[in-house]
Image 1: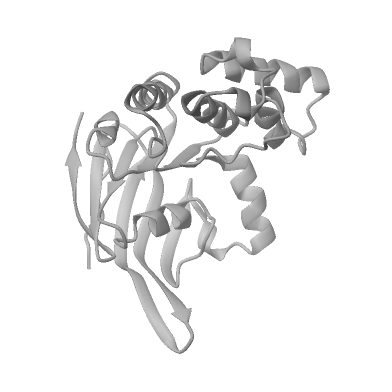
Image 2: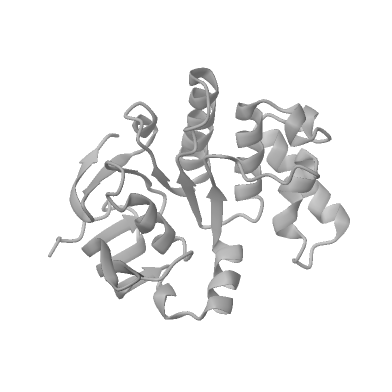
Length: 239
């Protein structure tokens, strides 16, 4: 069994994984992905998950974010056992607590930058004026106040990813999960996105978990956790 990683002494634990395992069934075959994973992530941490393809890092990210459920074990976020929630409860929890950043942005091509960032707020009770104020603030934070009326095909890859980051933080989530957020970007755009993620962590206290293959990208994190063949190999503190 992997011993749980201990949180920084000054920060309360936000995410706890205990003896988490995940397998999938393909036909008559059982495909194991994660084995007996235990991990603590404190509030305000920035964790990089690294490992070769097939190591289970994206699966682990999806379990923490409530996109998938473990086969066994316990996952709690802010004291809530999310593995025990049903699908509708999980969807509601994700909407309120998790911001998602993907490798390929996942923007709606028929919506402007403003419209894409506003999407998570459409089912809230906020007025149009309140939504507009929040979206303008988020786009300003990521340096795109002058691009809010542009469509995704009118933006560079780096700008599209910054729109995606603005969308991820618009509802002020407790947790931001990023799956290869720089994987489709040139070096300069990647550096800009990583600097923004670090700013969100350092200045706004956002807890971030980032999957990446890139040893340069992971330097933005506070610590990096290595996985291989579904098992945690250990954690390296970066800053």
